[in-house]
View 1 (cartoon, rainbow, N blue to C red):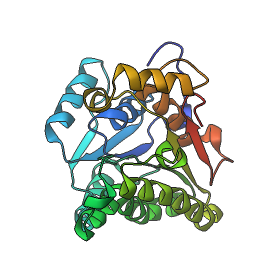
View 2 (cartoon, helix red, strand yellow):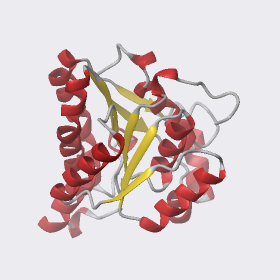
View 3 (cartoon, rainbow, N blue to C red):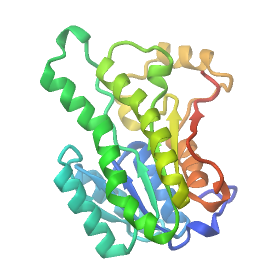
Length: 256
């Protein structure tokens, strides 16, 4: 944490589960929650990146998060992973449905199998993760669920229709669960990131021309980094946002 970062007492000791937490934006969530004194677990397929994240947090004097290897396309494995987190850390009070994969694809090349895989990778697991953790929150009398959408479909971005379809669906999923779970004091929100400068984005798609076009489209003339998103997620997880639910929160530097 920077000395200027907010401290949220309600997150200290809270059990937090982050999907796709080994790298990129997810790793920033894990680090920020650990810095708040939360008991953090994360799911991912990348054991090597998960080990590197744990080593980095230990070097910074933070508690080692619990890593559970899991392919989120396998719903039985997802349910087992949630159960393992519950057994190790206790009832889950915060769920961050972060995992996704924005693979580019031409509509002409999409097969039925590829379409189904992209929905599994980017949408289906969010529903079943909520289904798996909601009983903990119901028993506790409240909780916070933070889903992750994308700016891409709102911009009308082409070149990955299965991904943008899945991400649009997450906003509907958020609204429905906010209504269903609200009477139990469970808040459900959606975060809509702009173009975040993760290592993957920098390696694959960030060019001087693309960067210039993005900055021109944004009101704020700085590129976004994972910490910018994680700080919003902390607030949505904390009791400070106790009456905020069913909303989509955009962090894009004013691009939309």
